[in-house]
Length: 228
Ligand SMILES: *Cc1c(COP(=O)(O)O)cnc(C)c1O
Image (cartoon, rainbow, N blue to C red; front, side, top):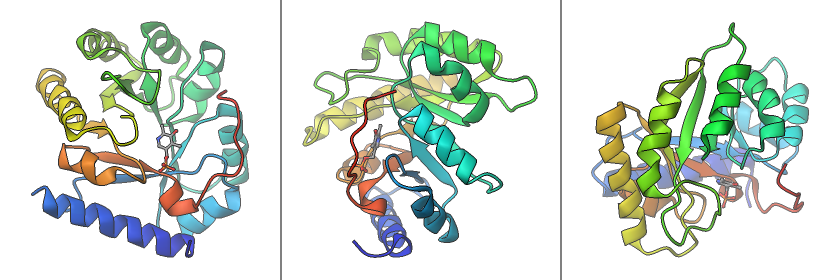
């Protein structure tokens, strides 16, 4: 792997090429740098290279990292699964939550989001059949959960998130893109969080507006932690 700055530039070039190949506008796709398991010093290198939005999977690790990077104008996204005993810390510290798949979790986040903060940005995680992640609602249930989130005061429904299994056929990506566009007409949201280091091109071809990229920026992850 090269330097973080070099890797970021290479990822941005891939995104730009995929936007062009799909006939999409330059800048249509946002890059979220997934920094889970990587030290704050590496995040700082990415910040120095102009990156502002970071994704984490483990709440306690993220809180430690935020404390070490306090004062920087960063946007924090929780991309991993969220258990109900962790919702308060997430509501108080994060800007976005990607993997909401239960109304109960959404209700807790809404109740715990401090009144003096902007509404918490929420994505409903969808699990099309065969997805790598066990999380997510079935596509047929996505509209109902989206409607519930949209009605909650301290939350802002921004769209959908999905994690197709490695090597998923293009038809799976298309199914997710089509669900996004259908619900987008109903709810007026703007974000499809879809695509990672190895599959961002397939995601961008089907309408992803945000790719979650870890390995291609920070290198391989060495620590494996329990989801928390
Ligand atoms: C770790 C993680 C990523 C980043 O995956 P890479 O293959 O390293 O780019 C993206 N999304 C989620 C939900 C993750 O947990």
